[in-house]
Length: 482
Image (spheres, rainbow, N blue to C red):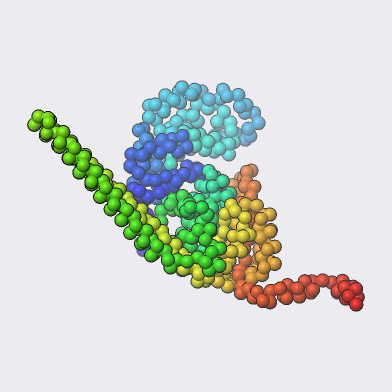
C-alpha cells in the first residue's frame, strides 16, 4: 500500500524555511511579507502544498513550485588537470554587475543567469572538475532564489536555534539534546518534570517524544513559563491538556508542607464577591450622578428654543449609551480577568497535587542557574529507580553537583559526559572532515535515583571511608589511639 503525500502547509501554522544550511521559523499567513536570506516573498501560494516542497521566488515576491530541470553538462565536460596557472585577477568574467542586474530586471531565472556566467567565464574550462562543481554551487547559492518549506521538528528547531541564537538556548547543541532525551528515557506515558530556561526548546522536544501521552510538569522561574520555541513545533491542542506548570518559588513550601491550596478557591470567590459589590456601589453612584446631570441639563434646556432642546437631548442620549457601553466593557474585562486567574489557580492546584505524589518518572534540568540547589530539591519529587539528566554549559557547576550527590546518596550510576561532534563532507573522491566544527556543546550529568535511607546514610559513609583507607594507615591510627 503506497504511503500518502504527507502533511500539507496550512494557514496559521508554523513552518520552517530552509535554504542551504540556514533555517528560519515563520507563521504561515496570507499577504505577510517574509524576508529570508536577502529575499522577500509571500507565502500565499505555498498554502496547500506538501511540506518539503521547494519553491522558486518569482517577480512580485510570489512562490512557484520548482520543477526539476536536467542540467545540461555538454558545456561543462571540458576540465583542466590542475588550477596552478589560473590567476584570480577579477578579469576572467566578461559580464559586469550592470549586465547581471539587467538580466535580473528582465525576469531571467537564476539558473539561466548561472549558465550565462559559465559561458562568459574565460577560466571555467581550465579549472578542474571539482573546482567547476564548486564554482557552480557558489553561483547557484547567490543567484538562484530557491526556498524549501519543511515541517518543524526537534532536530530542525534545535539546529536553527543553535546556528541563529545559541544564547537563548544556553548553547545547547542538537546532539547534546538528543543525548538528554535518551538518558532521560523520555517515552509516551511518562510523568516528567522539566526545568529549563532554553526558550521552551527542551520542553518541546520532550512533548514531541511523548506524543501527547503522559503528563509533564514544567518548573519555571519568575512570573511565568517561556515557551517561544514550544509554539514553533505546532502541536495540536490536546498535547497541552496534560502540560502543567509550577513556580520554582513555591517548591520549598511544597516540600515543607506549608503550601496550602485548600483555601485558594474560597478566597478567590470571596474576592470576586467583594469586587462585584464594589462595582455595584460604583454603578449606583454613577447612576445618581447621571440623574443629577440630566436634571440640570433639562432645567437649562427649557430656557432655550425647541430645536436646541432636541439637539441637547440627542447628545445626552449618546453620552449615556457611550457610558453604558464602557461600563459593560469594564465588567466583561473584570470577569475575563477573574476567569483567567481562576484557571491559573486551578492549574497550580493540579500541578501541586501531581508533585505531592512524588512518583515522577524522570527529571530534566537545562537552565542558566546553578544546578546543585535545583537538582537537590527537585529530586524529592522523583520516584526511585528513575533517570535524571542535568545540562550545563560549563563543567565546573556540574562537578560541584556531582560531589554533593555523592555525599548525599540516593543516586547511582552518576556520569559526567561531554559529546564531541564533527561534521564530514561525503562526496566521491573527496570525503573528509569539515574544516570548521563546534567547539563544545555543553556537559551532561546523568544518574538513577534509589531509595535514600537517611538513618543509615551517615554510618555507611563512615564505613566506606574506613574501607577506602590503606591498611598501613589504619594501623598507625590505631597505635596512636592506644
